[in-house]
Image (cartoon, rainbow over all chains, first blue to last red; front, side, top):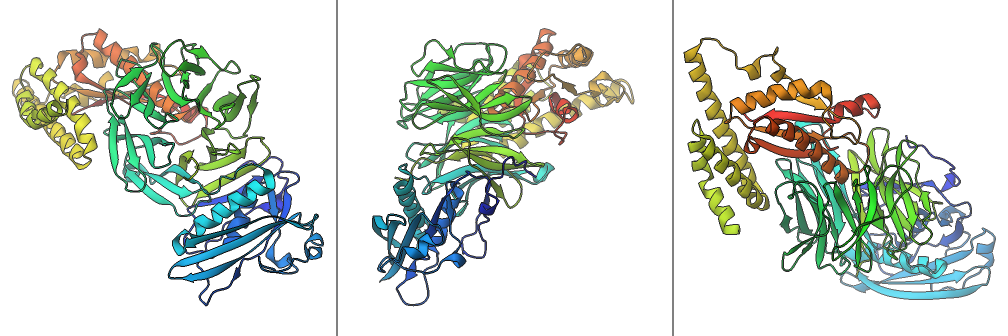
Length: 436
Length: 197
């Protein structure tokens, strides 16, 4: 099992219920480390105002699970609620002070006919006894889960001042079966693990899924051509894919430029892996590195002006930074003898990487301004860090026993979650950009 | 570019047929043609396997032809590749962590393969590079390729034609030992010489 240090919030361990929903979670999420003082909130079940049957999703439960999963909130169990007001009710704040809830969310759902629903909710500060905000949204039945994620984002932002990243998706790769039965699958699921859809199946490994900035495409590398590594771009909605790089040698580690027009990747057609940038419209390639060493795993800075990559030109893998138009590469990491696979935070201030620490491979974050490197995780073989689009969490791959699982850690290191699939190994996570 | 690749694909079966038991020059054309075709067939999914099967069948025909000639010259001479006492039966060599230097204890094995391949220019090999599970996946794919290239260099320095050798890397993706300890890692940091016959 996973080694859990400092389980500060054992009560917050959360398993998403399979029975509660028609769309099963492909990933189970549990909090393995919470903050010392998670903010207590009460999310009252949203009152159904229409005729039977009730809508297929329990909006308040989805919101509640999302807030708990962030590690920053501790939702009040329904059985402890002394009243169940909705957004048309007068609120008796005493009922919520008695159970120590700092904030209260109430709502209702109306039926608009056809497949349309109207969701209304209000957010209250219990101690001040006043409303902080109120929202209304109308959606189709198939988008109720998405609406619940959107509502979670709003509530999270009202209560923390930072945008939420619940209405997003996660791409990942699973490996299952052994020997000739080994299969690799590229998946996209909602950020809470639901609605998982297989995008690509292969007998050969799939690596490095990377989201386009508009969230519509995934680039990835695949060994499906008899072990020859090539790079594809696949449209998530249609499943249509396009081969973008299949030169002799390796073609891997794709990374979209922030404007979505270019793809940085590593190619070894010149004899050893070098960083290239391909202009997707013209297909023109620009070579950024010229060195006999391994140069791979490019990651763009958010301003699109430079690229951070892994190179062992100094003898061991370290991170370097090169202008996106080419030029001199400068070394970025000095601490330790293994720093690789950079992921840049959305604000461009931090770089997450895999860092060798006392013989273990862990996620570390380098603060670009101070130069301070902080080890964030406690695994032995952590891989593939990826920032949430709001910068709050880092998703990564780790191992639990002999299985690969996904995990996430808050950028302040205080909250940690683990995400497991029902069977097989899961690896190579990539958190999507914000849904537009 | 696309046209040439398609053209190469179209004439590939013919080249393979010519290749069976004839000169090394034609052989080089085959390698080039197959490389071009690879780029195209990948995009078309199913046809990739057709290409692989065709290539395999070509190799098979060639080897059987050679075997028949040998049998006529001297009865019951074992193909050295099939001799369990030959160094050629050893097809895997091992590497140190994050290293691609050929360790001295494996030089004799590689020398034996180099001699065999140089004397049999129609025989092709795929060299696979592999890594242990530590470190990052794409870096390990690159490291595996560097290991396979180190083996290729040893062979070509001794007269093996580059066209006889295909290099691929599986990085950490295809471990043979599933443990999470130095013993398993040492077995997984390997280069594999795979005869295409």
